[in-house]
Amino acid sequence: MRHITLLVLSTLVAGHAAAQTPQREELENAVTARHGETVEALRDWIAIPTIAAENRNVREGAEYMRRLALEAGFQQADIVPSGGVPGVFATLDAGAPVTLGVYFMYDVKQFDAAEWEAPPLEGKLLDKPGEGEVMMGRGAVNQKGPETAFLAALHAFKATGRKLPVNLVLVAEGEEEIASPNFHTILSRPEIASALRNTAGVIIPSASQNKQGVAGISLGAKGAVEFQLIVGGETSDKYPTADVHSSVHARVESPAWRLVKALDTLVADDGHTPAIDGWFENVEPLTERQKELVAIGVDGSNEADAKAALGVGRWIDDEDFLTSTERLVSQPTVNIQGLVSGYTGEGGKTVLPGRAEAKLEFRLVPDMTKEEAVTKLRQHLEKRGFDDVKVVVSGGYGPNQTDENSPLIQAQKTVLERAGIKYTLSPRSAGSWPGVVFNGPPLNLPTGQFGIGRGTGAHAPNEWFLIRSSDPKVAGLDEATLLYVDFLYEMAAASNAQP
Image (cartoon, rainbow, N blue to C red):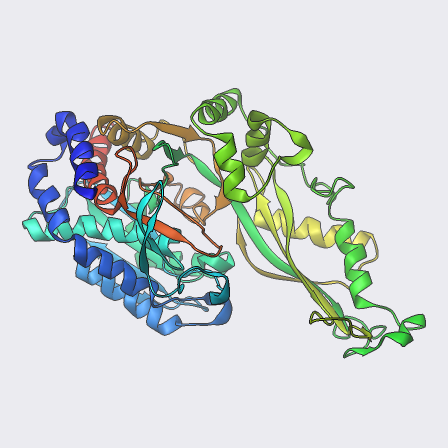
């Protein structure tokens, strides 16, 4: 079935993309011949999880990322200290007039193996009804699968002995999943900033197709700030320094109740509208064009599939699909990720907790900033007398936004159109990545998430990435790889065409 899918995509592309991709069949054959090696490369990468939150495989992850870059054809690749988990900086000089920036994350989210259908580090190939052959594993779709496809495109150039049509600058980090607390220090290094300054833009490989085969081009992404609110003996002497017998609650304050009271002030009574003082002050509403793009995207999507993927039966306030999708891309949020306090085992335990902690995140939209959001949070709590609630910010960055008429976005559109792949333009992703470090000052570069293929389960159990599709409209690993080949040629042409 994989051969049928590849043949269909090749037929769709051949009519026009062949003019942009010289001797494309040669590259296609190279991709096909290396399919098994590419699958094994993804499996091997999944087996080495770098988890920043657990300080797991920090050294190994960076070294492996460096090795992957060198094997794919980058002439130099260096591990770069960040003050936390290191990054990797690599360059590939093809002698081309155009240079493309590429952002990778090599870290992944935590996992509980007991929640998975297959071992999360095994990279097991499974047949998924209605999808095809998939690889299940932590990081399979977020982001090692799409990144493996991009690297496989570079291997195809090596195998055919031809130079890339663009030069590449790669920056990779191992802390994306904890909101990139040190990535800005990597980019502040003069040699890295200088290399990026000469690029036509920066992409992060992604798997953007839905079940109907419609791809997505995102013009931006929300920002994210991760933080913790802590109450206990460490924040005030009115709380015990350890769990104590619950009977003393008659005269000893409870950190748990105090935290609950503080949390309750952060949102309105509806449980979802942010209520932090001045929160919406710099929130830019959607433009008419952005609303138009949202409506087009909704027309190309299936609401039942969207709800099923989340395991919900209705949206906030029972809103219709269009209204809820506008909310998804336009609204900044205050989310509780988890609450930790006291006894959580089986049955009850008569204790008054000595400590309570909430793990939260903000999602930010233009023109909000991380600094603004954190300042407003602190002022909000202080104004209400919550000086005993400790705020610990562990990472974060602002939103990013790119003009749809930039060469980077135009190249993405052209490649998809030539491949006969339907796509939608989204004003921004509801998820986050640190594109603002490229998109904002001082670099001010176009940025974008780009790629075809499919997968689900990011941050959740049973994460998977499509290897061999059973549906000709949806790309598997080889088809995703070939589109990156075409994109590199188109990026060269689109950038050279600019005045």
